[in-house]
Length: 167
Image (cartoon, rainbow, N blue to C red; front, side):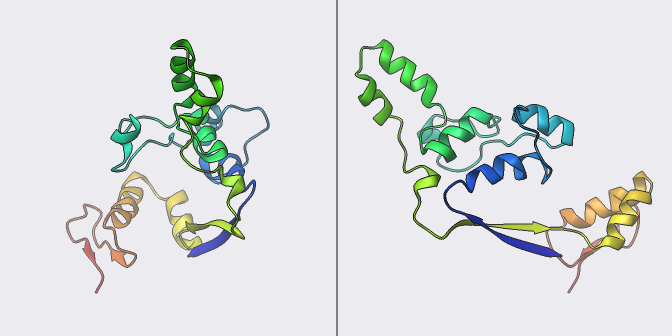
């Protein structure tokens, strides 16, 4: 099943911090993002994409909470704090140092009725029950079906030898 919901502009980016980044759970106030992810069993986000080199970011490196705040909340370079400190240390005017890290408008200033669509794929309840009650072999079969990268994937044997994409 696919559920969808609109993420509003304005403070909509905070929705990502409170729920999505912690596995659609609820993050307690003042709990660091990484601690909430660990508690929820959710891996941290990582940088990916073709434009990373231009920003001095490394593919596969972890996205820190501060980097996400800077990029989404302030529209600034994810490493703006470090860049600001280097520029200020070199004698650059504080206003100019800040301008040097601006990549765009903060998400809060985007003048759209909604910011994004949150699409969540949830397995049918029967599959969730099979997952919860099944042994490791059953879980591996379910994982393999998901890895086939097709919504109609089917697996016929626990070993995965007869797995195929549905026609």
